[in-house]
Structure formats: structure tokens, C-alpha cells
Image (tube, rainbow, N blue to C red):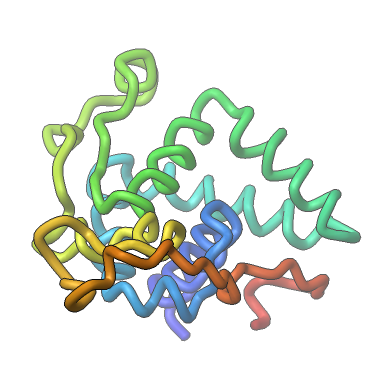
Length: 172
């Protein structure tokens, strides 16, 4: 497995931990490559590598799920540089939209011409995880069928990401 494939797999693991959707659900959106490329293009490979390295370290050092979640909260979400990027990854997966990073982040870590709010691909809106999370269909797309509006949503969330203690994220 080459470095880019390994990093993309780590990106899927990170995305799963941040969104609580498993790799199967993330791949099912058809957006993995688009989102990974967007992230690299906007924040840069060095920042992506740093984020994935911190994630891998947190994952490997955690003895249980609670320790893992605390590590994510402290080492990634609470980090001045990595936190805004991680929050953007969450928003990206749920809405299909890359939101421009905060002005303070751009001033501190560099501006990218591509860092503006936009839909990543023509399918990213309709494939947003938000629709699965609320058991609804995106407006104007993926019609649910005649009369489906008459029934309440039936949320059966069985595609959650699961923490599994292992020696190395790379050895999956």
C-alpha cells in the first residue's frame, strides 16, 4: 500500500471517528476521493499529514473508547491548528459543503485560493451524511416515493463507527 492510499485510509478512519459513520457508509457516499483531495488542496499536505499523525497517535495510545474520545477532544478538536480543520471535515461529510476556514486560521496557517465555501462535487449535497442521520431525502433529489411524507422518519442507525483497540491504525 503506497503512502497516499495509506493516508486516504487513515482519512476514512478519522472521518468515521469524527462523524460516527463507519467506513462502509462513508465509501457509500462516493465522496471519499473528492473530500480527501479537497482537504489536501485547501489546507495542504503537511497539515493533513499532521492531523492524521495525531489521530493515529491518539488511536494507538487509547486503552478504551473513553480515552480515545478524550484524546480526540483534547489533541485534535481542542488544537488551535487542527480543530478548525477537523470541524470542517465534519461539516463536509454531513452537508457536502466545504466551509471557508476561520479568518484567524487562514492568517496563522496560510490562505488558499480554493478556501471558500462551496459544494465539493455535483453529488456532495445529495450524498451528505445528514440525510442518513435524519432518515430524510435531500430536497429536489432522491425522491422518497408517493405518500412517504405521511409517515414519520424511521431512524435505525446501525452504521456507527466503532472504536476497536489495536496496535496500529496502519495495520488494519
